[in-house]
Length: 369
Image (cartoon, rainbow, N blue to C red; front, top):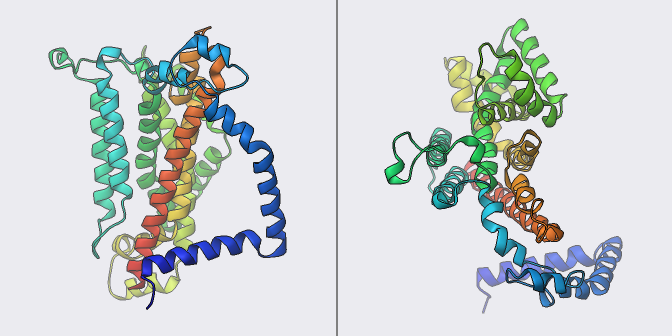
């Protein structure tokens, strides 16, 4: 009697894990070193993080175990300010709903296609754009809609997790078509266009994101004609979009160069115009091949959104400082707050990585058919 396929797969994974831990011989040494470190430090770390920790928002209890146990009560006490920033407390349902909408749009855009036909790239991008627009509407509100709880909230009150998701997802959604256009332009444009695009990409890639954010936040208003420049949040989003476009364009261009030239020639021999060749033949294959690199760019952009703190936008990391730096009672427990937002960043990055692997596996399976 043979074992069911699920049990066989489980045993194969266990055997593969054991083989990776104990073979070749150098892997056995690394596994032994990791086991020794876990044996030496694991009990003390577990005692600090769990057994001796304080979970309730009690400042006196946290001070009593300071240095011996973690104070997770700081998260229970300051979670609203950490997650939502300075958004009005009576309207907290709006950023919460905006966060759910953003996460749903990202999940829907990255969800692997179930049917053979799948979901087109245009529909995925359209779903992400709808989610972003809905989140912006919830966060900003509408003039004269105070009676429904949708009054205008200025962008300087936005913060926390919704702002991190909005900036990173918005920049990625805008940078993907722009990066595709730049990549195609560098391959098919005239000599002048190719050189201008190449110089622009190299210029942006040669600058750190902090410098681009400073330019958009502080120098751009000096060059803007008139008394008022666009909102600082809009300028920061444009700066992040420009930065992501430069990197995504090189990723997509690499995917296009990895394709056989015979595919473009075959499309031309069928009488297809160049635009149709790129739309229906080259770009779908290039994007599928570059899914790991694109997911890597998305993860990097999500983490880089923490840099907007330097231009006084209180995203997740900035909201943590806003919540604890001005409170002498809870300020000593900054480590626990940092570990909390670290867990949030890890969960977001791990989710993107898992969605990317599932999407790549599904598309690879469809291509293999």
